[in-house]
Amino acid sequence: LLLLHGDQDPVVPLTSGRALEAAAPHAEPLVTLAGEGHTFGATHPLPRVEGAREGAIRTTVSWLARMLADGGAEAAGHA
Image 1 (cartoon, rainbow, N blue to C red):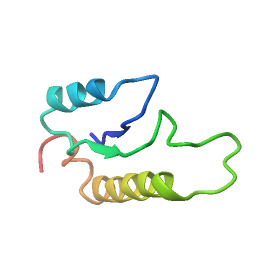
Image 2 (cartoon, rainbow, N blue to C red; image 1 turned 60 degrees about the vertical axis):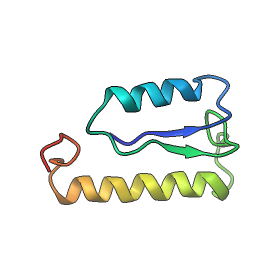
Image 3 (cartoon, one colour; image 1 turned 135 degrees about the vertical axis):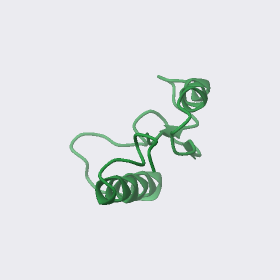
Image 4 (spheres, helix red, strand yellow; image 1 turned 45 degrees about the vertical axis):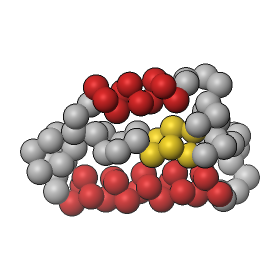
């Protein structure tokens, strides 16, 4: 389980992200994005990717690549 959370999220408080991390023993460590809100500043349509959004995308792609490489065993806690 990959958890990304903006520390300025007005929709879902950071405490909820921390609670989810604590409740999921096989989760990756919570990635907190400083100064970011619920959508990491994204709007639709997305005009460009930079800053925290770029970091969130890179973290997600890296995690997905690891999960696909091992058939999802790591995500299921079987790694």
